Length: 293
Image (cartoon, rainbow, N blue to C red; front, top):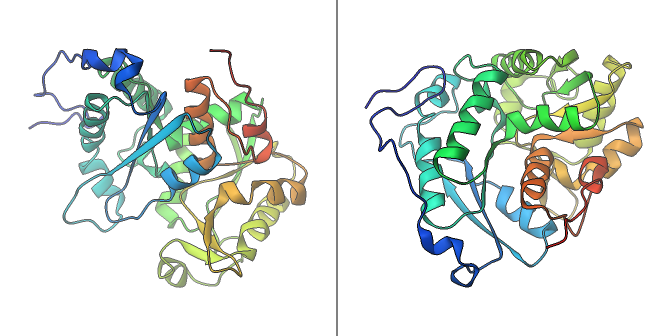
């Protein structure tokens, strides 16, 4: 099996795909709106759970982890396994998904790809499998543009330096002016990257707002603060919550829009379906309006 290094295109798959005809009949679907999520290998992903909590009851969600038996969260492994996104897309289309979302924002830059490459890849997957396909990293760009932003600051949370730098490069390739890009260590929230790595993406709740405030201070002229990745923040009740649950507090603290890659992915999915969340945290989600059936 060969793979295009730019887009991850699997070249020996069937070139013509037809989504099963039965999914065009609403009576054959469990839910009016069926959403498929995928996430990196070896992660329990909160994306489907967080999404369904804020979605209307007409939405059903199914998750499918990418399968790579040997995996250590390295950018090279994302590049090598990029073709699994197409496998996911075909599986979800076969099973009647109306839209698909890929969680994990640094997949868009792992192979040295830029915004044009990823836009082309998402468009091709959406067309081939007759089902809209969104990548989290690309939705960060789309959401910033939807808010009218040109100057942005990136709170890169737990990202390793090469992840941070790669995503900043990707954002710049989309003509966003990245005024600052820094992770927890750069921002002085935590002392060492080694400690951050050992937390398995879960951090004290106070780091959520504090890291955004420090990012805003680094780039006071930024119009929007961006948060990448899948950071979780554990509160006093013991529950770890993603950025989407903290957006209102973040925006109140800095007085400007804050968009995280989980929030922007949900936004893109709701927008594609023409519906709005029943709980709309933050400016981005709050501006969605459900379209009449």
